[in-house]
Length: 297
Image (tube, rainbow, N blue to C red):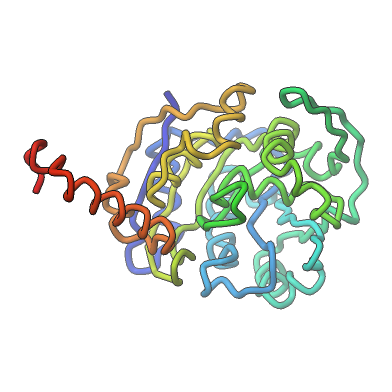
């Protein structure tokens, strides 16, 4: 089983919470690293206060941890790619990343402008060819820093694996929506992160809410399975999670260290459709006396 940590952010101290989450999964940084890539979620121009994009202050805290544990001179790149309705040059500026990168001496890289190498990858009966950006290919450590969100119907949730979809440098990403689950799995197979740290401080569900959560794992699949439970869904109901485990990218079985997931699940702003289904199911169980027979009513 994989380890997944869940930590409460106390008094807005990102650095303390991230450090604790990494200690809980026994993650150690090698002193031999020279280049680190951080992939936040900057899928659109919505400010981090909406819960839709990764907080630049969260990334800054992570960068400080990396320099404290590895070297003050380590090269850190923050990467994103252009999308169908988003351009990096605007997102970096509008979302506070330009200012943050300058203050903390980080490099901002638009993967859509990066050199790369075309690589073939197989998922089930599908074969894909993607350009793997040089910045990612040459990195000693790839850190995935996603958000927790509901997303388009075919995928259901957006977290660790969906965030790696943004590592595909091809801008017109809508062309992949027909086989989106397979493409997400393919990209995670091709550019598998070494570490995932979830920025769950502010989350986006039925509405935006302060959740105060940091999660960490070396397994993207496990952390997505854990986030699915927080969001009120079974990991087995999510196609890309099932496929990723079948492709041996990661595991759906995990052990949580830190705060129990139920604490955050009770506070997550679940989407109305899932709440309605749950309420309808409860009504049926009550109507036919099933809960009474189970001693739950």
